Length: 243
Length: 345
Image 1: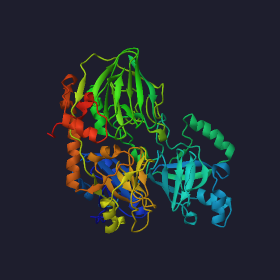
Image 2: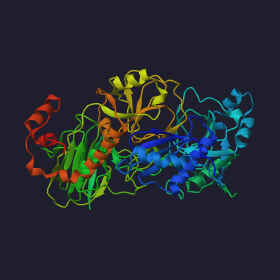
Image 3: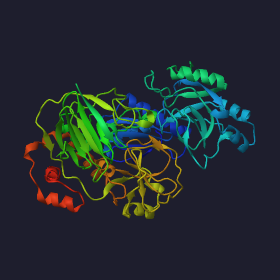
Image 4: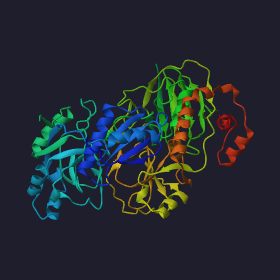
């Protein structure tokens, strides 16, 4: 029988939620454990849990304290959270088109300068990455990706922008991102995608799920305009790659 | 069907209900009423489910006119002067507007949000089970944005049922209770004590996303960047400038600042109704106390129908009336029902 894994920390997030924390840092193993616990709780629900929210390093579990208390819930979660990880199942993979640079990626040139290289080289490194949706958060559909090329790791901007465009493709720290709605951001803007990771009245409303794999491919700005119109009309645009 | 037309309304007013649950994993926040007990009280007065959609009215005045028939409404929450054609309407009572009549509400005299519930509730197209406005995500029905003058709701015609008042449980007073965590270990004992022992005020730049707190700067032990993790209603995060922000119903679903403490469920509405500039304190409680309070809060909402009274039995409570006037509120005798508070069962 496989040995159990070290227990996560159970941190109270008020009286109706617990943060099940596997790591304090961005860590691929911790993220796998987060997603495995999330899946296990969805497959065999614990009475009283109302909603789960996976993040890089922890699973936020919302619950009804009228149905289960903090200690009792912790005792039910711990044995599941310390189980050896199940074998990796095939994840969905999305190919996402990106119009890099120019008005769609206003930081591309500055990023190239900061890293002493050319914009084309930055695009090549970004397109060359094999990413995973580690979490979705902040605003609807904002997909935080792990797997950014180490040479592209750089600090966030000193002065975050109060508004960045819908569909922004950006990098910040060790993370890459697909942003759906216009929002404030302190990340570096490399390009824009016509893909809507969140679109009301479309099936599915949310395109990406934590655990999905993502790769990017470059499109020119004219193709962006065409795809953007199609996406506005409800087309998914992103290509799902059958493994 | 009748219509209720928004004749005039100030900013920070929108349709809200019990919130949008189940999609926080996709970054979609819950929204919903800032003060759930007052939403539930207003709804209970007109026979709706406690968390049905109602109008959340911000601190400024508003007026509503019935068209094409009578409309039954009720108000609860932040106290304000209210009248129909010059006849005062008490808080925590129902009133029927005849065709063409207008309910006029003044500024909030304390607190921020007043709830106007409509008999038969506001109708619309729910998304993830909710009509609540989340303006940033373009969600909410019938209007996916704050309300404006000349917006209107198609509503059930008033049934002619007798008017009711509701005797609410005595509001809790004293410090806003918090549970420390989830990242209280990102602060040393001195800074945790500074947070718990200082007087705080809510900044005027606060909104449904977060209440910015003015007071001493809280210092972090290891800097202000943590790896983003999930937030809840009432999470108190401390950004780099040391000024805490209590995250409210339109919060981001995740955040990258350490969260020193979390407001307990039973006290979130009370924090939401604390006016900008009013001094208050926090108090740390145990998990057992917080969860006991959460269960009692849920029970108080479930038992609201037991607190309904016929509105012609309003008795004057001179002591409460006088207390209220001392507190700076101009309370009319007709308003006395608002202040007639029975002991906690």
